[in-house]
Length: 86
Image (cartoon, rainbow, N blue to C red; front, side):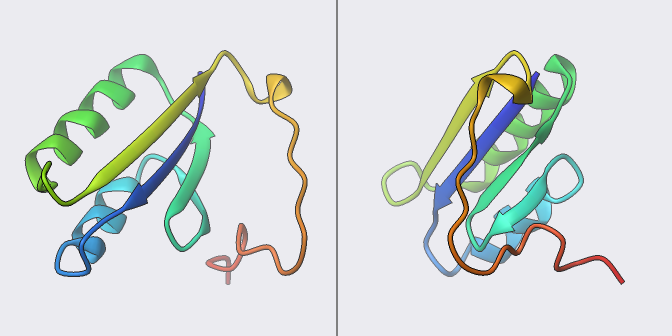
């Protein structure tokens, strides 16, 4: 499945949340990740996020699609999608 994950996290926890997401998805904006992920890995990712966020302060939104072909992407400006490639 293909997912889009976006978060709005208190800055005390933002680096932890980013580090949790990086092994599973590609970062395309400061708080937005996308990518193919298995159902099992999504379950693990959600579980890790649930343990780290403060539900009264933080927000994580995950949009799940069957595959990337079902989403149309329009980009304006600089794309950060491949900024971590050496």
